[in-house]
Image (tube, rainbow, N blue to C red; front, side):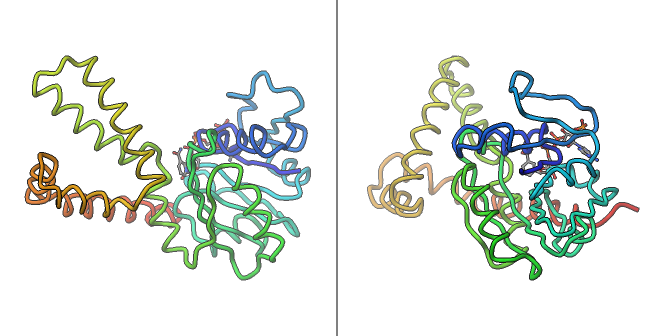
Length: 262
Ligand SMILES: NC(=O)c1ccc[n+]([C@@H]2O[C@H](COP(=O)([O-])OP(=O)(O)OC[C@H]3O[C@@H](n4cnc5c(N)ncnc54)[C@H](OP(=O)(O)O)[C@@H]3O)[C@@H](O)[C@H]2O)c1
């Protein structure tokens, strides 16, 4: 039995959806926890329990996924004991997580709401107290959400909290900037939206499966056509600096969540 505290929230419910849709896990093998008792997207799912008492959820579970907002986590005291606890919360470091979870068997992961479609990227790092079986469990549970990788440091988790945690995240920012320019150039808004959606779908698929992004850029610069002119102008205008400043700010914001309030 896997318990997901915060399992009806944006991320928790996506992670709960994934094993039921793609992992062959029946709803009876999951228990979700929240304060309200609301069932959210699982209103019609028979066999799936929602519990309001975190202690009861822990007692009913062999492993716990922690997916509440960081500000709500500090007040929790889970007494998980011999159960592994996997956090997908932004910012909260392994050391603090062990205190919240009441076990040294803690794993810190990141994922995204794209998990519901099997499209999340889910890195994780285990505390020294986590066993090989705990790491294998994390790998198995998160695999239903999309690709999973065990990484070497918590610092990497903070980076992925900024990069791949929010989805569509920064991709939406760039798409919106492109859309705005298309409209400014006189393309009707509805057609601009259809075109930009298709542009990002096609670009996303080519980048996901083809050569790395830098190879595409180098190829287009070498071709020296219209796109090369545009790419050079974007870089001269500070694209790389802007992306660097934005990601640094997001990583810093993620790390700031790792300090208890007050
Ligand atoms: N959403 C994202 O895109 C995303 C991406 C990466 C990481 N994350 C991380 O995922 C975590 C959850 O974020 P979210 O966006 O999914 O938040 P959310 O939609 O607000 O969901 C949080 C859930 O936790 C429940 N909850 C809050 N306090 C609780 C408590 N003390 N005991 C039990 N349940 C409690 C809430 O339900 P009740 O109000 O009914 O209690 C709610 O359903 C955060 O730590 C965030 O950093 C989110």
